[in-house]
Image 1 (cartoon, rainbow, N blue to C red):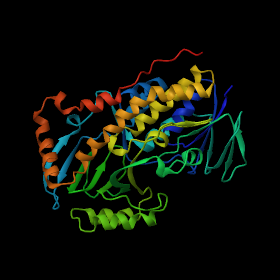
Image 2 (tube, rainbow, N blue to C red):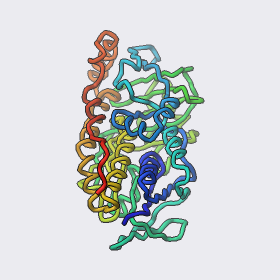
Image 3 (tube, rainbow, N blue to C red):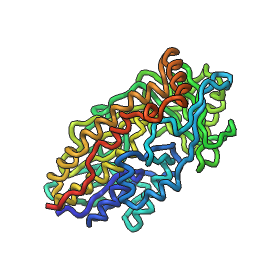
Image 4 (cartoon, rainbow, N blue to C red):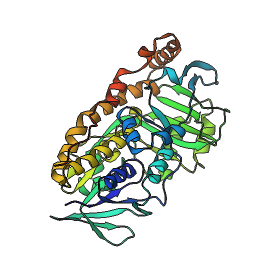
Length: 395
């Protein structure tokens, strides 16, 4: 019977899965490339079914205490003059949704898995499946055998590449690249976001309640670009080229990107796969079905996916063949609906035409005069809750 399970990745899906596996009597080990839990990151949302999972984990109070406390957003022109403003309670949100920094969620999940074996500063280099176990080789540690291996290692998953094939076989590029990093609070913001758009470009600065400084975001439409996702020296020139003619505080942000301790740059890409398991290896979260940041649902999918996968392994009494099939059956529609909403996010955040920008700004201007139900996106609300989280009876 399955007992020992190696999880690759210690961001959100990995620790969440480790929590539930331990609750169900399994013995998880988590391997993470970074030397420690990554702090910082950008603001993420825990919505719908993910709020239910957080409550069952006993961390919902912790998440609420770590809220960003954001109050709203202003859109400005190239000279910094206000074009439109909107309050957070007028934007897409449900009554129980929680917005917090990605690093805060990772830390909370890690703290709730105290006693789970974590191997930091290492990563998987080879996976060899046998009839009764998986032999795993690492960059630094000696090889080990596990009953199962789960890839929770994000968009550029090593487990997916080793067990399923090249990343390019499973990506759907959505036409944008984004950079997010910590910087000074140039605008003196207080729980507020300020953004400037030109067609196909977005530059923004926001300061959450929990930030010492502020977070910058630079997003742009382009053909798919070539770069090393782990090497900023291949990414910064692309950012410079995309924003070299932009005004507002963009030159300051480009300079700040060079010294940011948490500089992030990547394509806006979804992961689409026909199957999330192969033999004794399975994927959870962004590694198997990343919806992209434009959906706002990546962290929620990770939390729910971890819960469902652990639940099905428990219900199957460790029979991974049965459990992996049930996991996919339960998650498929939920994933599809949440991936679909990413296209709406693109239209709102980075319109590609001047007409699209004007229409977006008009929508924000009208929001204070619309009924609350009109401002709340029913598509997002429906997608965030489109799964049955009732416990399964073990076989």
